[in-house]
Image: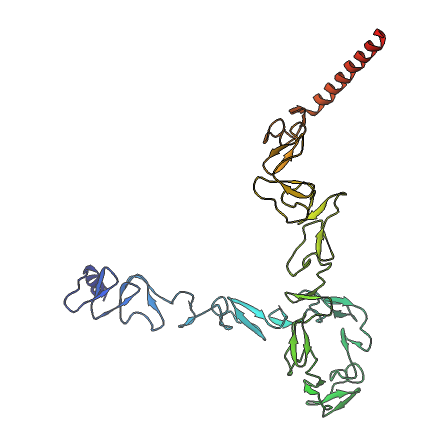
Length: 384
């Protein structure tokens, strides 16, 4: 059969003797099949495989699949072969993009999905165990329970409704029974459903929203039997988090608008502690009287060739200033435009009378100049 493959491979189109064309350069005989432009023996590969580079290579699974115990499996979504052959996802987990994940806001801890907001064995993070007598509330270990709840072996339980702690810790109701007013009962009141032994209002219960076992995400609430993203008055739902966009530095003014490091969010705007006469524009303290990119107010840009004067865009500069790009500069003192536009002084220099001078030299020159002015003044007095 290998010989047949080689004979077939030696022929090039146009094909003859009953051979058929495979790709642009090969002719296959009846004992072969055309796979990805190659002549492969008919009996070599399984129906779910393709041959790789002809008879001399092994049979392979299509791209994106793996050969798992005699079958080509898509390991990106198969919960029994998630990410690789034989890797099984845990209870309540699904396989997504080759990884076992939990749903409904739960986390995978030791291959089990759990709520790290309430699990005393995985409080906040997997493996974080609360101490004896402690409970897990909002992902933190606490020594006390909220009003109306009792600490039963690290779990805050409502002994009026909890079938595992009905009336007192450790009192379990029978199969199918619920706990009502601290007593085990076989039925629920009107409007409630029996969810694992608990009489539940599926219109408002975020763990059984609409039906038993349907959990809303941590950031959602259950309204009229549906998980809702609505937040309290004055808050916005930003990617599942109820945020105050008036003060939240990660959602300032609107969702996703992050303030820069060191800034705060005031009245829905990112703000820095700027000097008097300056405004914080996108986290930068700006003089809106002269800044051509924020002229008069943040975001107002002057046109090409214009400068900002007294908070208004202008095509000319005040007396004594020179137009350098979009900025009116004093070329006698401007370190970025010293003497001429674009001439920058070094870090250890300052611009003095249109020349870049070393800082120490400028001070010495001033002292000498002041000395000679004083001598001249005394000379004038003496002459009079």
